[in-house]
Length: 145
Image 1 (cartoon, rainbow, N blue to C red):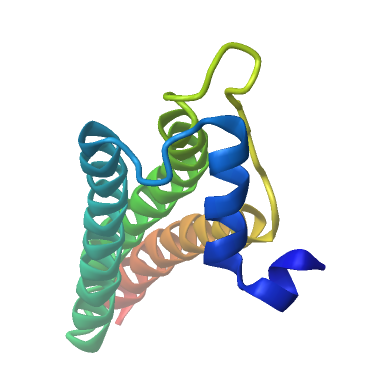
Image 2 (tube, rainbow, N blue to C red):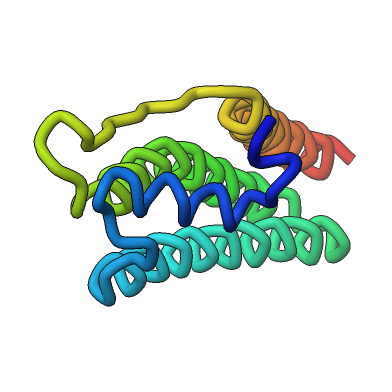
């Protein structure tokens, strides 16, 4: 209620002054949090690049290569899922590292973003398997015709 009336930043500063904590994070905390965020962005960039590769290969109708590309995409999505869980935990540990004993936090969160990533990874794996089977059927069809 106080945060709504006064403002979140002012309330946070007031609470920090009451408990004797620093208002600003230490430089190493800022660097570590930025590194965690940048690594996650890199994983997302690699995932989108893999998705683009799947689309390009499908546009060229190279079904065997599309299956392998979809498998790679699935691996990247699984990596993003695992990193999202690890990154949240690391961020909480880093953000509360300067706090005193008994005031540090450890949080492992699995919520709807992680469930969505798991579903996307499963769909990419299913797509990879389907494209591999379609490529095999296409090769059989070409041999018959």
